[in-house]
Image (cartoon, rainbow, N blue to C red; front, side):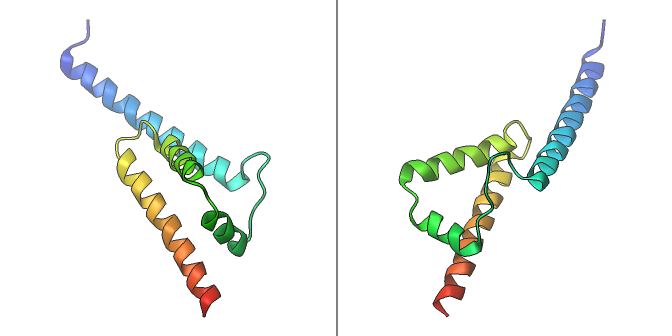
Amino acid sequence: MLSKQRLEEVRGNLITWYTTKRSRLIKVMEEAGAVGTVKLSPSDQVERFLHMTDEEWQQELYRIGLRYKGLPNEEELVTTDVQDFLSYIREHLQRSVS
C-alpha cells in the first residue's frame, strides 16, 4: 500500500510528464502545420478575422482552449495566445493603414 505522501509524489510526476509530453507534441504538430490547412498571408489573416462571425470567434476560442486543456496554467496560456493574436492583427491593421 502506498502512503499518501508517495501517492502525491507519483501524481506530481505524472502531471509533469503529461504536460511536458503534451506541450512537446503540440509544438511538433504546429511546426508541421495542421493537415489540410492552408497558410494564409498576414493580409488574408486580417481579412478573415475582420469577417468572423460571433460563432466563428467562439469556435476559435474553443480551439485555443483545447490546445491547453488540462495544463495547470491553462487560463493564463489561453489569455496569452488570444492577446498575442489580437496584437498581431492590430499590428497588421496599422501597417495597412499607414
